[in-house]
Length: 487
Image (cartoon, rainbow, N blue to C red; front, side):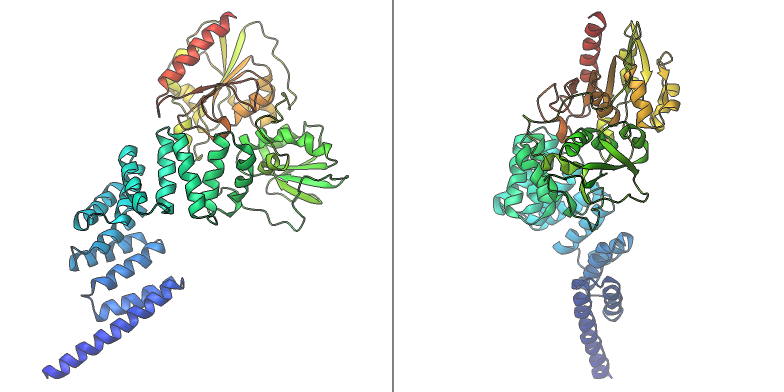
């Protein structure tokens, strides 16, 4: 009897291991559903094997089934509380769930069991980075890179973290090292492109910028047209489609190139999102404007709008910066009229950094001699009614249903003060004096350490000196505004 039970147990173990190995093969080949089923069968036969629970957890994690992944990892942890890889996977699952502080503890447990564990140091650094503990995060990334100088994730996260603390030169070196370490990795080139552009190295930056289409998180899909991409050669009357990507501000900024496309002999068709259609229809160089998402007219060649600077070999010295490049009426009011925008679109990935609480601008509207006009649209336009001290601000939100109407409103103003959003681009494109309030880590187009913009001659930049601290910025704007009212 004992021998039979022993033989049966041994047979079950053999069967369980065979299922476990098949599950690993299925997982390696990306057949996760089949892999999960096989792991579960193996666990029923041999529930005391921590590695089975651990590997099941890993596959559940990559399948997005994070709650189940955590439960499997906890099963493995009860069976093997000192096993390093269990704590490591558990930390990854918790991080994927957004429980960064608890994930940090898991990676710290790995380091306490096995000091010098590079993957744990890397992931601890990533958690610290996400928690805003940037200096501590940099120590972890440095520890990894001392041993593995080409560790791609460490280089990438090091670059991002260095940018958050204002060490933009060091971040640029990290991104450059990442490209050398992984020359075929799209995301490294994309990070490098943004850093090159931020530093004004446009010649290399536009080339690297083309890698955006190969990244897995670029916000615009690559268009699959049968017509060829335009390479900048003479068009000789062919119809060229310049099509939309990214946001309104990008379309406004790079619409400056459309006259140059027409000068190359192109019959210009522009595709843009609906609120921009009436504005772009005002351009004499544009033959037709198509609305994004609707049927396109016939065309011979095409180009994404953000590829125009590359085609025209744009450098800092030859940016087509003549403004205005949109027509608009001019102010004829006796009093000085100032437009105000304090928030961008809430779904923008960096909106929390670039937008300002309206209450922080109360000192501006208290300055005498100014008529204030709100150009704010969207949900944040309601702030005018909710925040005390802004009763005298004229609310034009209901009129601003597209960018042509916004342009007409801006044309009747003397100055626009805005955070980094599409209205700032529009006002500056209309040659209106435009004061732009920038977060500590600016978008690449505003570059570094300058108060002017090579893209917009009438723009003036007011930058944060420390992250999330708008008070000194608003103070400088108020001082400049008082001087402006007396000029």
